[in-house]
Length: 152
Image (cartoon, rainbow, N blue to C red):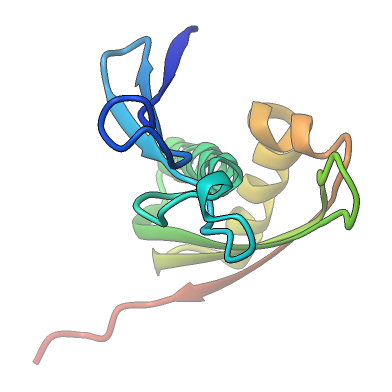
């Protein structure tokens, strides 16, 4: 796996903290820093997600992918899956994630035990992002199942 990350600040304005990432699969992702009121030339322009936000989105994508795949392989009728992630970071540099909560919402006629098992398997075995971030952060999970209302 590889990617190239390039600073965009030198292209036009000569300032800012924007970056463009090109992934090994050929996709582009913009990143930017938060504006800095004290030193505007040192901050971003809030034009794209922060790099650490993208780290959390990677965690969510990795885990949700696993959960859907595990449920589908178990022949469960999963219709949707989302994960809301809330994280806390250390106060001092490096400001690693120290606590992460992942709340899954699974839609469909899926037994609670199957969802619980799928989340545990993702967290403990399959999701590389979860295992890596678990080295610095306490990761907790929760879930809810939403059954679709019958159509009238």
